[in-house]
Picture 1 (cartoon, rainbow, N blue to C red):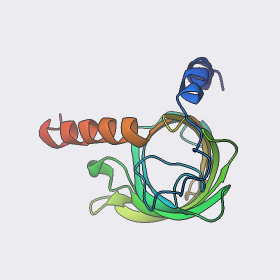
Picture 2: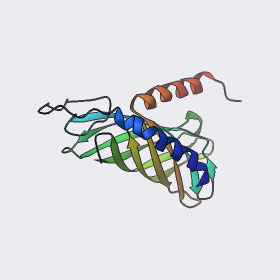
Picture 3: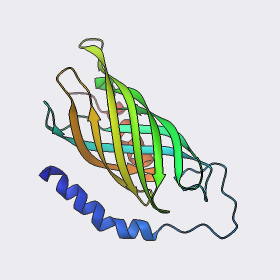
Picture 4: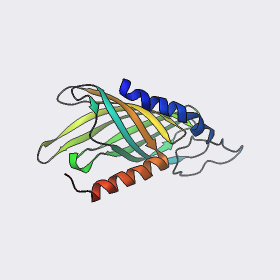
Length: 190
């Protein structure tokens, strides 16, 4: 838990600035049909999901920092002003074959704060080591559509794993994800 404390403190320090950047919907304005940045139902009917996550395993057989980032791409549809549903495609580093899908439920707690719940399944491994399916459960709180903190559970042959971490969402998640995966593609493995 102590490994996650600096991340949590940084997010709490940045949260007021991120929340102040959120502007309320103008009175009588119609929601946009599709938005790049996540917005509640009074602002947007559907939106893109782009998130880059990094976490630490707190419980389970493999504690400590994971050797992969996770990038989520997908879309969600607002169902009313305070709820959204959707799905994402999940992938990690190409060398470990981490791929999957997750269903998503979002509850808007305010114009800039949301709670996400995402059950899913991923396939890990490669042709050499063999591929395995793992069930996942992910909960997150996002702040100002820039940052988020999460808990993540995953089943495995060695027992369940539970971890915590931080993620970049929207533009920061897209830019950081493109930069990271471009770097992985051009830098040879050692």
